[in-house]
Length: 542
Image: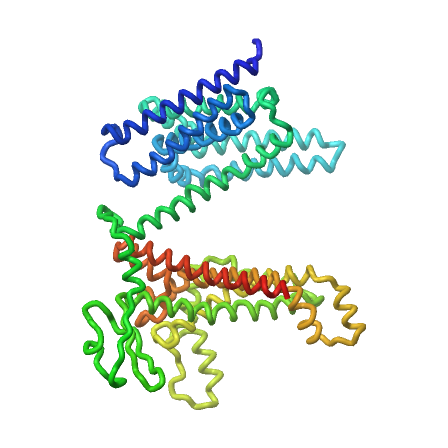
């Protein structure tokens, strides 16, 4: 069979992209002028229009540039075909029920586990033959045989044939799936036509440009995941924050009303410290947030959403206590673990385990430790304060508004400290020993070495640890959700911003207001991070 010429491949590819561009334009017109897609929301139409318009323009440019034999045509062609392939494949798998079929695979996976272990043993045996030249062929043959048998039995046990038969039947029964499958095949053929090296040379693409394109190809899954699962929902939440969406049907554009409710505060003077709130502020709109004394004059602060400001206060308090307790002990622990003492590898592993353990399991353990009647924390406090003859030293850690936040902080700091110590340990091991040896020769003690060598050279690591710990603390949710029940603890003493927006969005079904709170939290995190970056830049400048 005569191989396909480069000129023919370019003509076919140019025609294909032109056809796709016209078809997408027709789909956009039918989306707005007809009722082909049924009754869908306007914002969904705009999202689909933007996506299809971008693909239509990309395919149109690819068709034009390929016809003119420009190198940009190859990039546009590959990008357009690749995106169409991903979209068509995702839709095809969805309509065929592959994603829901993963649950069925999970139910049958256990039956094929022994065969999978047999295949793994076969691979291990085949690898062992590399160190035994005389019997290498035998080991390789036996290992490959075991892998083949194990793989076949595994596929049989998990009912692969039944699944393929079901997919084939669903494909033949659905014209839409057949159309999507055809589109997948055509896009794959288009990728192959343009990806070939002869086609690239005909378009004047150098090897360096080809290697760069290969790099972008490897990055594309992560980029698409970021685009569809992070950037897309992020922009959607920004739109939702300007609506009164209730997570079901209502979605009216209300502008800045949600943000106005969040930041709506009033400050009014008081004639006395005990003046009633309703005589100073409109209690139908505002709730009393706090009272302040400025130079002998009393003022009352009212908030339209008092709970938000309580959550903001609790969030800042949590950050204020958790970050130092997670960073300073981690630094001290890293210095100890970096010393040449026996058994340090074991202790490094032990201290790191809380960071990788499941948060739910850790929360349940600490919930038991904090139990006021039988918890070990109160037991040790009772034993330690026995000489003071205190009648009832037991502390209601999670049911008392005065100690609930402290209990959450202790658990979070304990869990985070091990991970931060590993980061500090990595930074310590990058510091040259020659600096410490020179300082010793100059008569410097351990304390002077720590302040003059260790801390300055650990500045980049410290900046990273403090930044990530602060961001993590501002987004705290799991410890509060597990330890304090109901969510937020007694009198909302542990309610922070993320649990608050969870309440608004998924318990009160105020998705619009919850999205506005989420963007306010993003602004707070951005300000904290920007301040730390500026502080680090000034420190490096000095």
